[in-house]
Length: 317
Image (tube, rainbow, N blue to C red; front, side):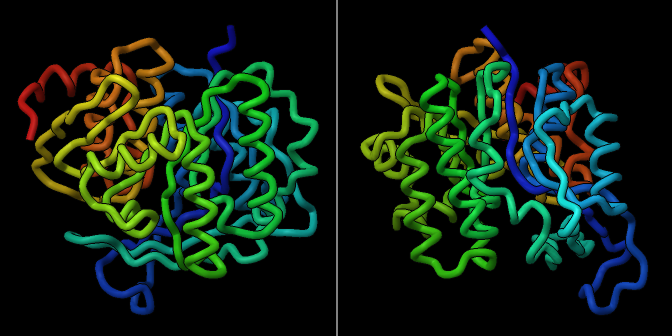
């Protein structure tokens, strides 16, 4: 039985401001790689899992750097594709000491935005047991939405566990109705659905964790885990539900990537056969570790670091 996880999405070059202030006043940046699915891939690799990444990159310096970083982290590039006509996307992120950073995207017409159903139709997924996606890739274009639908169908046909994090980016969608309808359709077909409270309010008009979970379970999702930020998470599936408290974070450095860290913790736990509550607790731990680091994936822990943190921080928020 294969135990490899496949991530599908758009990794991008990331310029992080070296000083606080609005982006139009920043003069210096440090460079890294961003992308929700890339963050999950890095997190899973650092925990010792076999990881593949389906994406499309430009044959430019950003694309080559991302490919190098994937290899460095142990992420398989067997399904990674290239475009000679389109470039790799990139983004700017401000430095903040509190609140969420300002983000500006340069990803319109990127290589990843051309990923299509034709690109995925003949993929060999036999090595994979889990497929994790977010709502970012289908936001990019009509072709990426078609590719997402086909990937979901292939996952269903081939018996892969399909995990979906809405990761809403309203500014990337043509309109809110298209976004909401697509997200709710995919959520209803998911084995694991991972909304946040603010996202659920947009998608289904609900903001109580129990009501959100009940809504998506009734729609067809098998497991719903509602992320509650520092408070932890609420999980529900047929015959089992509960809250798992979060960890106390002494200083929040950067909230970006916390949900991706949570996904890596939860999915790795499920793949290793942990009880659901323990898998959610691991997700909470990695989310807490991640917000204490500035980069989108720099703080994602190794197995030893995770075990040490969870042992030291037994008292939750």
